[in-house]
Length: 110
View: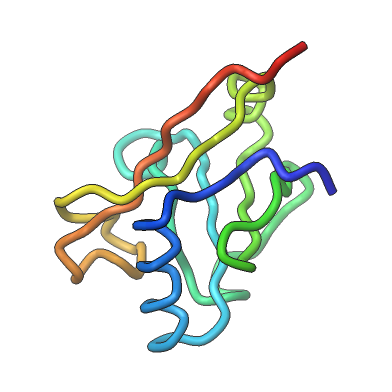
């Protein structure tokens, strides 16, 4: 697996906190409107992964998926998952923490 996603120390700390509370996690970024363009954190298996989802790698030992349509735009980037103050997505587990996951990126070398 080519790990095309990484996480900042702040994101890894939040992942560890959430995993201690909820158990194994998974991430998905769909690219849809509103919350869909942010990385969403779920309990493992809570979101059904389909044929149009791409596994980009793992952060904090947890799988990170992206919808194929969104991946078409991001395929030449290294995603860096960070944490900032604010409310997360309505269904994302970090929503009540006062923090939210945020995707940053850098171009991959060709």
